[in-house]
Image (cartoon, rainbow, N blue to C red):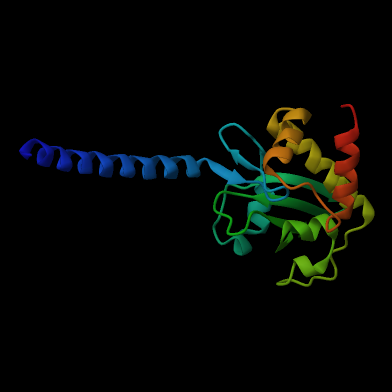
Amino acid sequence: MPLRNLRLPFIVANSVVALALSALMGHAQSRWYMADPVFGIGYDIRKVHFERAPAILEKACAADLRGRKGFWVYAYWKEGKTEYFVISNQQSQESGGAAVIRDGACTLGLPEWVLTGQVRFNPDNNDALIKFPPTVLRGLAVDLLRRYVAAFGGKGNFLEAVRKDGIPPDEKLPVLKDEFDRFSKSPN
């Protein structure tokens, strides 16, 4: 009987250590894990690499970003003096955002805002001067797909990630849905 009593503290101590290590490992893994802002694909940032946002984004949007840095670009298009971005970083409260830089001024919103051009996805900033002609929406959609293929190491890997862990675009993102459907059916 005394031998059993000696094992119990040992078992409890080992259990506590195992739980603590498990929690630390989970935190370490979550530090490297995030979800993309368009398809919701969970990925390890050590394996999937999106391009870093250019300095112009952090400079023009510094006040709105409140010191947050280290953004990745998921889609980009430039038309005239206006640049459109879908971005995210590990500190994003939502899964990503959108930025439009026009004449050096920054306007932020949700990714759906620049992917649809609909002001309802940018409730804080109803800037009617920002236009989203079809060339911008299509350009963003094509660039987004190109960037995802590059980041995931090929078209097959990207489509498999969407199939396993993501959500394909639907009617809420009509231009992206059309481009995604065409892209996923094309041989290359």
